[in-house]
Image (cartoon, rainbow, N blue to C red; front, side):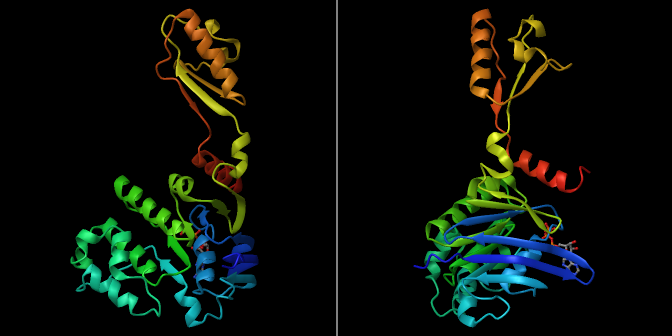
Length: 306
Ligand code: ATP
């Protein structure tokens, strides 16, 4: 097994005539990682991913995908890459099994068709026509089509858009099982929960540049940001009765909302006080900033606070 990264990009730029959509991007995707690319519409994600897939040319910069420049792809290289596009329509008359078998025929070392059907959870639909599948089932078939060639690197473009919550969780299980097989996965998504759940590394694109990178828990300085303690001021308790640091955190609506760098101590003070005076804080919550909070902060900053 090589330890060479799956993807290396240095100084990547892409212009569409006058407009520069990607403005000097550097990134490395290690093998066996789930790598999530986040960013608002028009940030340059698809442009970058399609350059990696060999479907778009670049203006300048260096790109290596599985050790190959995607602008000069070989058939052997193509076979090592699986792609799940945002939208796809299957040949309507074929069943799930027939569709997968047809795709398997394009590869020299395909994965077993039945095993692939099982992996993406379509065993009960193996004999159903692909055109009759539900939206979520079609996406599973798309993932199966990307997997049947047994690729090393898989690109998933918004893999769960339009899924109901249950289908989304099932898709996450499929993606996690691909990672367990040692595959490298590049995922674009607008769902922060998806990135939080699946990604080993995240980059956030905005305006053609990477504005943040890191693990889901550390990106954007997330670890250092204050936590938030919230509860409703109990009846018969005045703001001035609360422990000192909470007194100025009471809103006009009677909600207490405190940002604290030291939630362990603040919660301790609050609950010790509450037990002492005999009040219950039934709706007490303590929360770290979510990935979505961080993402919105990063991308708003980039837009000049619009
Ligand atoms: P989304 O989340 O909406 O998919 P994205 O981050 O994938 O967005 P891109 O599709 O890479 O964004 O587009 C980046 C910018 O480049 C956009 O402003 C887009 O209008 C522009 N662009 C993309 N493709 C072309 C093209 N073929 N010709 C001209 N401009 C393009």
